[in-house]
Image 1 (cartoon, rainbow, N blue to C red):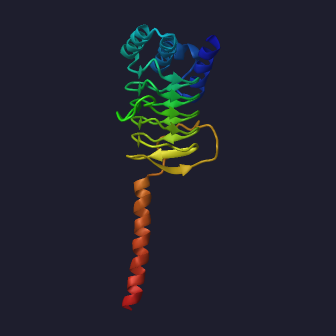
Image 2 (cartoon, one colour):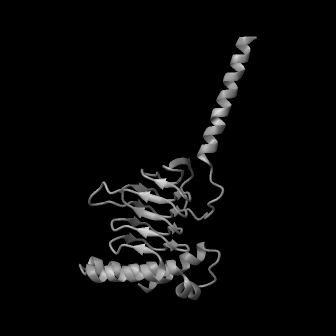
Image 3 (cartoon, rainbow, N blue to C red):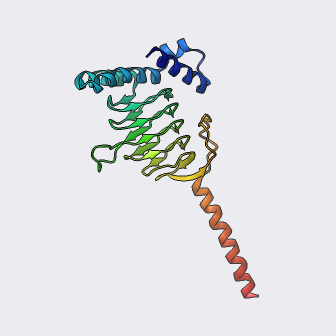
Length: 211
């Protein structure tokens, strides 16, 4: 457990430019505290002491503003940046070295039983306010843009944006260390440009026919 604590601290320090050291993260980062509480709650959950597990998770929610069900499976190196408003459901699985920003929901749609929540691969970044809803997989090294609503599986090494989310690009296999949420292609603008180009081509043909 001590090795995992050190790993989590170093992983956060590596990815958060505001972090200045392990002690600062350990004492002051609410997202880190939420994950730490969850690891304790998950231990009790696995050992069938679910009331104690929920008690710890609810206390963690009160203290940090982050709600992680004790049944969720959280990998190493999770960075919950800012943290407020993050919700992670009971059957959610989050891989290693993921980054989750404020307001993210890893939830269900209300239509499924059993596995109801998403599985997030390794090295995934989920932007602020994004909602990932349903029992599907978001592949390794992918990015979910801020405000996106993901309702279907996302392949690995992909970037998804929009409501509902669409995959707009695929990159080479590599861990997602770029936390840039601004310079992501706009699928609406791309479609408008495509339509404009087609209209211009049609207009040229019409002009030629009129001549």
